[in-house]
Image (cartoon, rainbow, N blue to C red; front, side, top):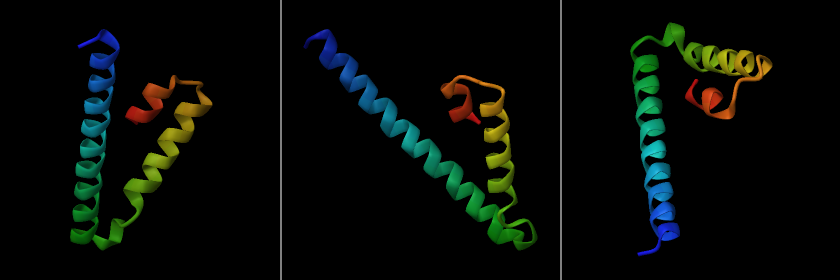
Length: 67
């Protein structure tokens, strides 16, 4: 197997893990909002604000994505 093939394989596996991680976060968010409707949407608004601040601070894309 060539190096490029291995790199592509690793990139694909990384993308799958990222999607799974994002799905888990989303599931936790939804379940917490179901338990406490008073704060529904709060986590999303905080995330959006934190991302906007990171972008305004010219943080690298990987830092913004982590937020």
